[in-house]
Image (cartoon, rainbow, N blue to C red):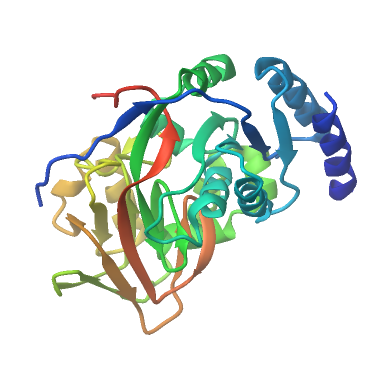
Length: 327
């Protein structure tokens, strides 16, 4: 049923430590962009979105992802076909797939295409970080048309990239248990339902080793390439997409009481002051555990430890507002 709906939509789309921040800004004319759309909504709603995008973008080509992984393959094919602007229309998961299609197999090499973003997904943390409006496709498209390109850092976790955040342990287990159906029905609240199921389970210890050889341990770990996590929460107070550093939060405990304390402190932006939370920055990390521990990238479950995380500085070109927001 879903495949037939996707086929119909495709037919419609074809017709109708301190270091100074490294910040680059160039201007370019956006020509012949390709839009990769994740039609997560029901087919009639997605069809209306396609019609709206066609009018807004003056008939830009739209290609639809039918299942997980399609966005990556569509982006890889687009690069091979010579597209120089690839626009991810969706949430953080769609952006992650598109970026992996653009840059996933080319470690250390700048992608040949520039990324644009139309935030129409359930979770749009990357767009929030960049200052792209969530409530107006017209304003988001205007930013793309302005042609201002920011060169952002690109983290790599194993063989895959992520643009905004990664989670190891609790966070990834919540993602693993949150079904696509519940995300469609409940939106961000679906993650809280899964968190209630996971809370209190005894986690295996995670070992974290930095590039300087310092070893740390914790119950779960969050990694950031920016300030925000999970929407409006400023988890990484020193986070920047252009400083060449990963932001790391290690939470030492995971009982229901501990999780309550953590969430309360996060809401007050005081979590880094807790004795059992460690916050630091690093150029690279190695994470291991003696037991199976999952990890997620940009809100999508990927695999299990061990994991090596590195950062490529200033390598990802993104169409975004001409100056980072200050707050």
